[in-house]
Length: 123
Length: 138
Image 1: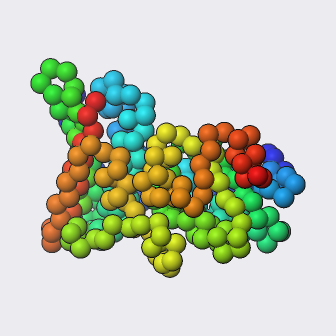
Image 2: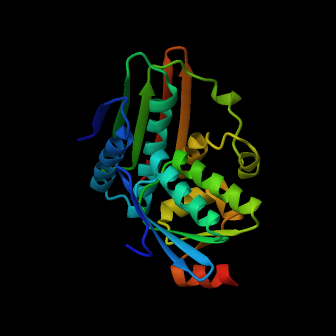
């Protein structure tokens, strides 16, 4: 576990690593509606704590569904509202392709790995 | 084995069971891992649409996997059928991220994702239910 927070659903584990002004949210498992809600709960808590730069590292997620992604869109909307930054990294080929099909990458950049994502989001 | 049909009860996460069968059959055809993953995601989306929206009194969704090809497997055809209330595919507006960001309703992406991931997609829908036929070349 990184940084102290861990939430379990039936099929998704979410952990957080808080760093100076930026938080990395790690997921492991299926992002469906419950999984999306767990991510949103963590993201909104981080926003309440003052984090305006979030990175979702989906390296431990091999499958998502559109209901789960719809909840990620709500987080993107919130980040736009607070003039924050949200990025994704470590996506599978299909999850990345799906995000491009849906147009998410226009509002939340996709990075191949975490160091690149952190450097770009901090820049 | 050329054809398999699953009857899925309408309970949460049944789409994952269908995706496992899709994976096993696509692997047996020696489809590439990335293409298998795309098939898996499309199956999940088609099943969720049927499980969530069909309002079928039968409470089942039928998923048929067919390996098409005379000698070597050429493509995987997957049919997802429900006996629900149906809808008019031509009346479904294609979602855009710009519109969804402004809207209270963020959902409604399933068909767009399926069309983006599969090589061929056909949707037949009426008062006796909906059938989504989708194919991926090997």
